Length: 158
Ligand SMILES: [Zn+2]
Image (cartoon, rainbow, N blue to C red; front, side, top):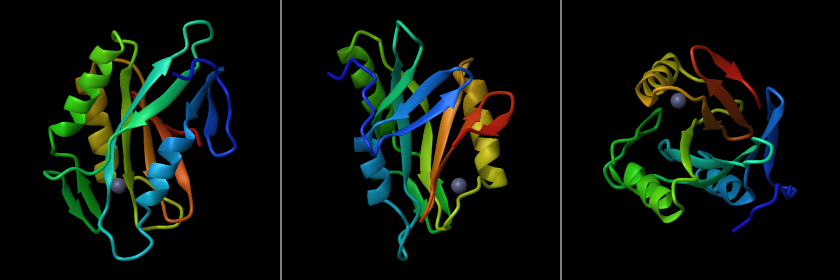
């Protein structure tokens, strides 16, 4: 397993109040694979990461992708399949609890993505249910990938 904060050229790295957050190249490739360049419906999943003990940097290393029971429309994605959370539970157990659920991702059929009112409502709802800790929510547009930190407020970090 990758234990150091190595930056590959295709990783996304951004600052979050003094620490770094990285989304690995593998996950970036997953996002790109689901870009809505044609007539595809929206896609999405959850993000799983771990904090480095020595410096608090966050590495987002696992993500789920659309599953059978999710509802996928051209302009909507509803994460309904239990498989997303089951996958997280598996990663959590296999690694003695060092991984945490850190957010959601989904695609938009627009170049520069912006969260819809429904997205914001949904992020808030998830944050309240999660009982503390920030969420990092990604929207994959057809040209850009953008990331919002969500707690009591919603702020774009990337
Ligand atoms: Zn959306």
